[in-house]
Amino acid sequence: MYCIDAGSDYCPCHLAETLDCILCSQLSGEEFCQCKDWCGVCIYEQYISNGKKAKNLRKTYDCPILDKKVAEDSLCMFTLEGPENLVRELSNAGSFVFLRNKESVNYYDVPISIINADKTNNTLDVAIKSSGTKTKALFKLNKGDKILLRGPFSNGIMGLSNVSNAKDGISLIIARGIGIAPSIPVMKKLYSNKNKVISIIDTQFKENFYEDYFKECKSKVLDCTILDEGNLSEKFKLILEKILRENSINLVHCGGPDIMSYEIIDFIDKMNNSKNKFINFSCCNNSKMSCGEGICASCTKHYDGDIVRRLCKVQMDPRDLFKGRRLL
Image (cartoon, rainbow, N blue to C red; front, side, top):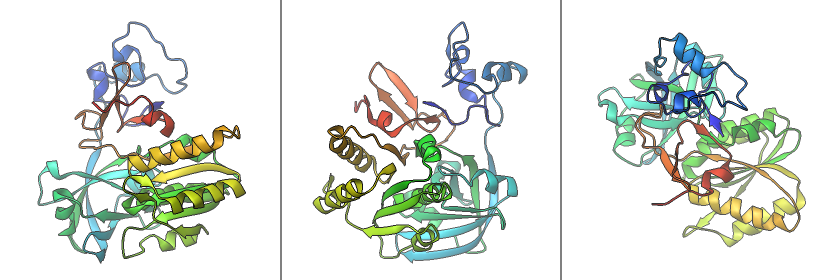
């Protein structure tokens, strides 16, 4: 477990000012340095050098909408033009931004995953599902309009180190609905690491907005209903068992709701316990977010031992994400 922003241009952040730093013991109320695994720039030294204050928050950019495609009433895709440095920072798996209609107040900021960051043309592709007041405001925008974009943010995927370490093998993508969008950069990373990618997809939409990306990564795509009333469908379990039995999978990525990720991790772990196999996971970070900076606490989850984790910043293994989480 570590902080996704540690050592970046945004560290130390405002959590340091309130002694709530995720990584630095001295900036979380301890008297002495207790850093054991951190090998980067000293966060405490950076805090002192910066006048005992946080570094700047992310900027908000005025981005032109170069293209808008409405796949259906509840799904549209935007292609946005952004500054070169921003596009470059959003080119990794787990990247996301907060988008807002210029006519809306700042409470309308909504986190949206980056599907593709084109560093040659300085463009960003996003897919938006209309699911509430914030996203409906974005649907009103059209090609030629400008949209407010705040970023870059990086913690949209849990288990990023597992994705980076999966190389020269066979990886499995399991994605459902709008969870397909943040899974695409994960697939690209796995493909660039010379992995063969197999994908089980539960589209949920009439329009296949992801097809070209999966073809680009030469992924074998299996269409299947994954969840049936909150449980893994029998057909999906049969397909998953067959894939795991016939292939040596080095990583399973889950792109969908938390219940789906939890059920898949539990199913695979029970299946592999008797065979002494261990498979790494990554999954979407589905935490509710309002600021993305760890300040608003809307992303916090409570764990056993009265541990509170700000999931907009804490990067962790998916197994640890669900282990010991308190529902009340």
